[in-house]
Length: 178
Image 1 (tube, rainbow, N blue to C red):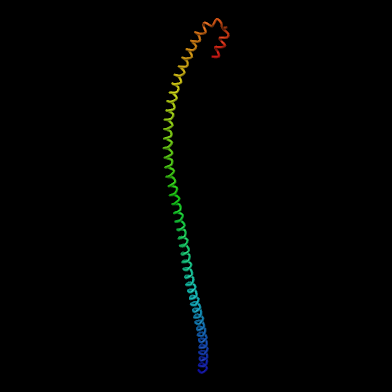
Image 2: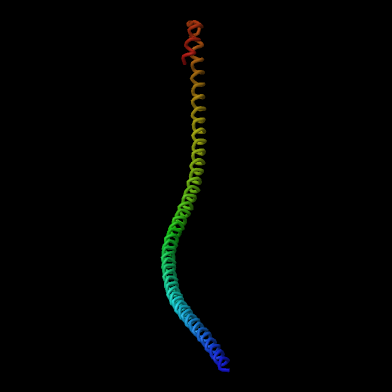
């Protein structure tokens, strides 16, 4: 019994030693788990901090980009407005010039029509005057022909008595000179 008790005591002591070792190993495992947990929590906290910083940086960059885009948009809008105003002024100027040219064209067409009418009147007056001059010339020509015929007749009368003295050849040569 004593040997049995001793052996039991030894077994119990061995068992206690094994349990103590298991407890120590469990404590070590718990400590390692707690260290791992702390490390994981620290890492998670670091990642959260990085995420927060990245989020702030992203939002700042986004705001800066928005500001840049809005500034570019405003600048483009101003340039477009200035260009549109310039084009509007140019269009107004061209429309004014067009109206002026249309007025000048209308005046030129009216002047051309008037000149054409005046030319027709002058042509009609010229034709009437020419006809009057032709009639006057015809009257004068008729009077001159009548006078020429009268002189020829008188010459014939004067020539007849003197004909016997003049040779026929001389008379025909002289007749061609008159």
